[in-house]
Amino acid sequence: MLALKKKSVKSAFEALIPKIMEEGTEMITEDGQKCKEIMNTIIEINDPSDKSISEKYPLGERAVKSYTEQLLHGSAATFVYDYHERIFEYPNDKKELKNDQIEYIVNKLKEQINSRRAVAITWNPYIDQSVKDVPCLQIVQFLVRDNKLYQTVLFRSNDAFLAFHANAIGLIALGEMVAEKLGIELVKYTHHSVSMHVYSERDIDNLKSFLK
Image (spheres, rainbow, N blue to C red):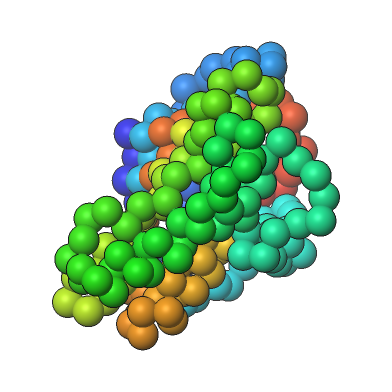
């Protein structure tokens, strides 16, 4: 287990990668790729409004903007799943019914400010148990305490080197959307990954540059 408390996603990213490389356990993924992994990594971001991007993040600002745009507004491309659909248009197994989970969350918190039910999920067993590409993000939950918004997300699996930075900033943007609709401030973002990992063989060249 690893717990990090940092001001920003940038500072968390820059601390996370060396930790995994030094302390991670080697494992082989389902598709045969070599990884270093720390199970149950929890990262607390205390100033989510700081969206600065690390110069060491190999995919850069473009990847962050692309992920954020697709998360909040969707994509014209066709995928087995996309996070915008799962969060804003959660489908039944035949995709005949759609549920806007963010609308539910906002309404729930307006009705009951202390609710612990302001939860959005992405996993759909009718779809995801039988396909290759499945959501890494599983849960987004919001709590309001002392008229401030707290956001927690759970990933079943997270590529720390190439995905975490963009994921976290994009999800914070989602949290700020909820905060704006509620008329309050997002003050903390907590990112929990059951398997936080780096692809130690696939990304070896970029990892060497990062660790210099």
